[in-house]
Length: 302
Image (cartoon, rainbow, N blue to C red; front, side):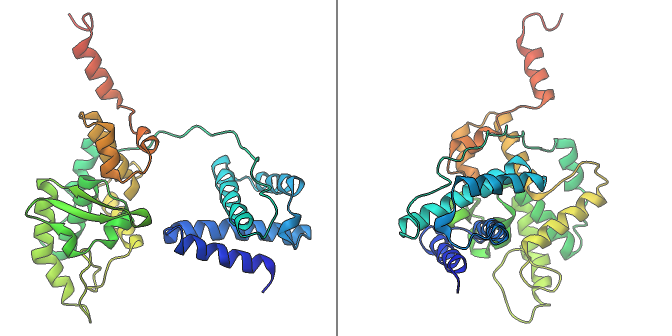
């Protein structure tokens, strides 16, 4: 095993065991290291101790020549900074050559969200007389009611839902845990599905599962499966806007803030570690902006 492979393996174990990083995070780091190692092989650099600013500058040039966006480049640099910080701590290198590499911060785009008229079409598209329709309705009501990530939705177990007090137990990124309340529409959709459709789907399975959302063979639904379901619902609703699970999370946060929820509460519900991650949702819709103006400005109307 060469130095690059051994160092990468040790770093992945560090992320998994010490940092408790999610599988998605570990995959991103692995991809970023792999692209950097490929570059080093091309440049004839076989020792990480020989990585200096000149090598890094050539690496950045190679990334931009591939037409990678600033966001992708920034992520790779961030990954490599963390990697070399680990190597330095482990005495594999004498310093971190990425320490002083900075990139201009790109302006964060405002997250896309759905208007209520668009949501209503999605809420009305499922056939609630069959198990699949009941499941799909429960999924979309849950995603919008709670703002949870699709991975959190996919991992949900029956025991995580407490109908007596209307809350869900969610295990999020880095195994961070939180409780999220849900409203009447999600409650009805979930009860209808769990008491009827889910039982019928479960009967098709060879072994029982406690996963809330099941596929048409009675097994636990995957995150990809949820995305496929949502795409089909959008198609059936004849929506012209692009809808993806995270857009429902954006919509949840935007609607909560537009209706008066405070930023800290929304941060807690979303499971954001930093308030800055939640502040991107403080934009308001043009309709609400106009409504507030028309109702508040003394000379807005006759």
